[in-house]
Image 1 (tube, rainbow, N blue to C red):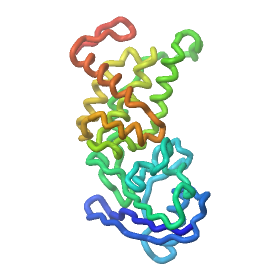
Image 2: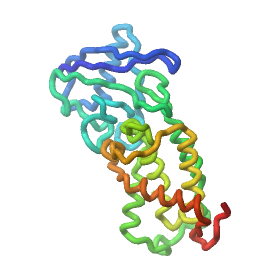
Image 3: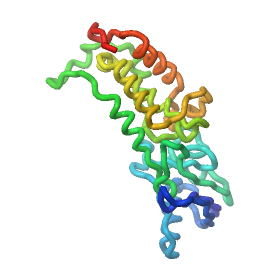
Image 4: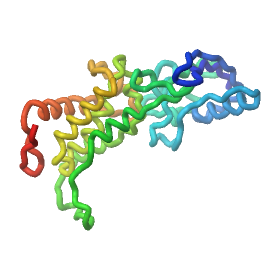
Length: 258
């Protein structure tokens, strides 16, 4: 395969970026997209040029590091697929491919295709902890949980924090990410004691980071590599309102002081 690449190059956060074009020949259809990028970087290095900087880690669709906008879509044209799981056979021979970093005011570009996603870390940190004993392992059947609740919580927990939802949203909203992180604990008994305090802290931190508001475009769900539903956003909004308008009762029957 021969492909024509148009890649965003930016030396540092304070430098002006630009698109640069590269032709790459001999691309194997069974190469992953990141392997293709490795081949390009070997070629650039051999020619004495600076290689393209991009994030990657596990290359198994788990870590969420492979953040690229490919032909205008976060992680590329294949649904529920991370960039590292995208293969060159998904493109035609001679294809023109445009590669950019995730675009968001809250995700400043560090270099080329790498962005600073530490805002997500601060949102998670704002969520705090769960109150649970640190003694012997409890009996797994000691707290009955409905199967549907378990499945829904696991769906939320599948979020890998890649930021595709932010890149896909016209408003640069992080509501899908935040709602997934809120819901996977808030739906389980172990997460009840801090449930309302957690959602208030995480949503407030999200807004402080400068992410946009949700307008129900659902682009986040469409481009999420794990297919996380926007239904979690509605659940988070309901809990957030409760945390601000009433004194909610936690799982221990105690009132949260507002």
